[in-house]
Amino acid sequence: MKTLQWQSRLFQQLSNHELYELLKFRVDIFVVEQNCPYPELDDKDTHIETRHITAHCNSTLFAYARLLSPGVRYPEVNIGRFAVDASSRHQRFGTLLMEKCLEEAANIWPDLNIKISAQEHLKDFYENFGFKKISEMYLEDNIPHITMLKDH
Image 1: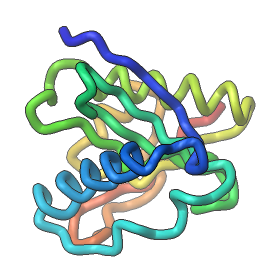
Image 2: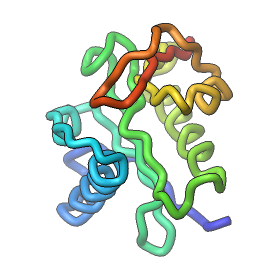
Image 3: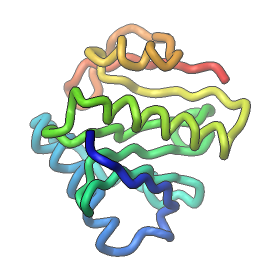
Image 4: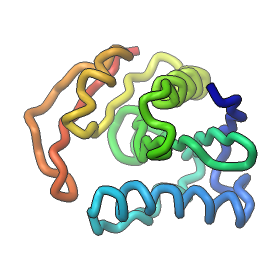
């Protein structure tokens, strides 16, 4: 398995190069790979408390997620833009990324629930971390999603 270097950064801590890299990564996965045109830049990246979680190996971005503080998207903490490079899927990077996200959320916002909008086909993955389905399927950007909640 690759050795990863993990970082959690606020928007103002990102260099121009890091910001470009993570936005390109997200667009490549969510817009191009999933063939889903939608407004990727949603003004939540720049929120004062938003955390950008990244994993690099040999200076290449392999995994990314965004943590939103309570009140930005939901009353709860939100994990979103959860992505692993296509060439690295099914190698536990998603598991490691979720573990980092949950650890970071617990350190910053202890005792708060976490809500996610999950692609429906990943329901079992998120259930392994204690998330429970709390909605029926709905289309978000034409992709089946469900809302899931993890109690603190």
